[in-house]
Image (tube, rainbow, N blue to C red; front, side):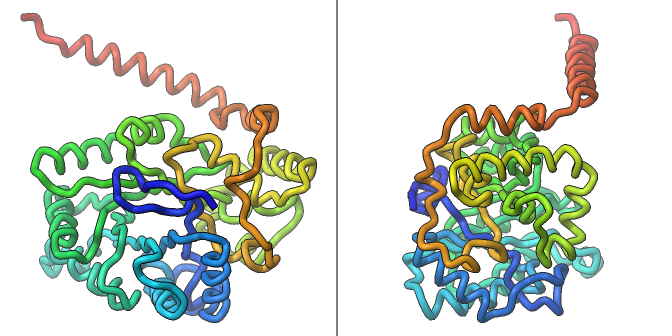
Length: 350
């Protein structure tokens, strides 16, 4: 396992992060395919044995039971200072707003509940799970600054936003002397590469760590064509994300399997390694936990040690045409031209 600093933070983390959305009580929450506590504990222990020290969960995962499973297991098998734990909070609900619960009060309530679930005094990274359009950013940033100052979180991160939003909110924090986001968790993998346009270059320039979710495309990149699983069958959220582009995605998935087969490694390893190679130096793959990681009793996790060949990357990319169909390339050009014309039309003479 390779280790490195998490962006601008004083946190040394494994290049592989164990995503914990697959942990939790399957009878509560969004997903029916999550694994129970004994299975979760086995996966967490195996991950630690393989050198993983970075764990990512959220209060939204199975109504907090993912946090509970992770916290109880880590308490038994690891020293708190030896692991890096990230969790996330959701935006205010309509009920919160109706009750006049402020953004700062909401964040305080969320972190307190997460710490209770995790049975911890603090988290290393507290992540703004998705943009809250109903709460002023001043409330969000002041609330997060307060919990960092109180010692309940060491650093803060953000997820599911656009590059301009991250730039805006971190600029505000810097101007006001508040805590800035040190990590960005966006959707990124071999079959969804939108982050390469603006988010990845921006984060690289600012030394903001990328901790992408769905690195295996909800299991699709860990399977050979025709193979299935309980999650692939039941994960309706993932179907919304991927089913519309299935024909094009299947070409890439087949090429991952072909390259992996030629090199006698698992498709899961090839898919993760491709992510690490593409954005090496500031990207940490957040891998799911209900697939091949422990079920196959692998003796090592050599994603970071695989020697890659440029021909392999070129072969995979040729199957996806850079993941941007021609119609969208044309539309993007039109947008850029319209923007430039709009700027010139609004310039006032001196």
